[in-house]
Image (cartoon, rainbow, N blue to C red; front, side, top):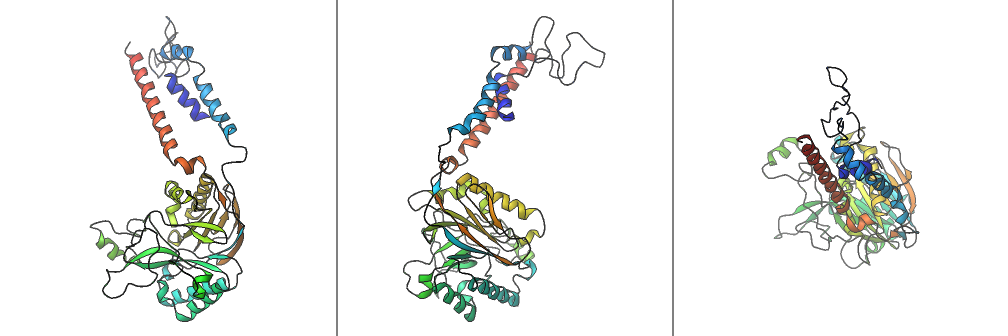
Length: 397
């Protein structure tokens, strides 16, 4: 309401009549002296009101109308809301590994973490289990045989698993489904993508057809995930593991599990709402969003609750529930209204079992993206410029 009132005043080209904030001048009070705003703009003169007073007298209702429009706008919402439940509820297990960042790429700790994730997967009965970003620090084809056998056996019993891991890709096809194993001899130089691989029951049992479901991160972090031109020396000096990923393609399809369609994003990709909404469109648009993250880099800072707040905002904007599986926190399930349904304590290993209800339908943000907000910001700037120009014109008279 305050913003609307400010915009209204800007459009009216005025501030309230009367002395400015500075009050009387240093020489003592003057019966009709100007305030800080200058003569003719706010203070008035013995001859009559200044420019501001005349503008408000001509258009006194502009601020009130702008404020009222903002207050009454929610009444235009559809009676049933913009979205509606879709498909059967989906049981999900979200796993938080709590693997220290300085130990994450130590070979012995890597294998121990994979074994622990496999144990937590086997202990659950959810239709889908989600592991954090780089839960596997090696591509799937380099998984120790015993761990791979355990994962595939439990998946074949009807339990899909989505694993954050680096995956080989020499080129990412438009469908987003590339090879899950290393390219063979004679192929293009292999690249690694920061990916999510889903092992479905059919795939685990050897009865699945078609490409392996995978998502490759698109919005890469400079220096951490890709090397800007001319800065290879920096990544080499910092010894950043997996510091130069291949970029994922646009339009990667959601994963289909238990009658729901799940669109994944990795780490801080959920900061960019306009990049998530494309997955919601069309007959096969996503009914659930899911984020896998590893922000152990930030330790016990405010980054963890901040990232949870970001995810809640994306749920509000899109009307979709958001699942979060993180390494150190905050692992949580969020409904389509941005409410946290359940969460694990940060910096503790654990598993969170939840049931999520997918939704369909498009909110105004899902349809229009950042356009209206950017347009409103530009309109405010234009209104402020007009007001300033009128004020300058009044001071020259």
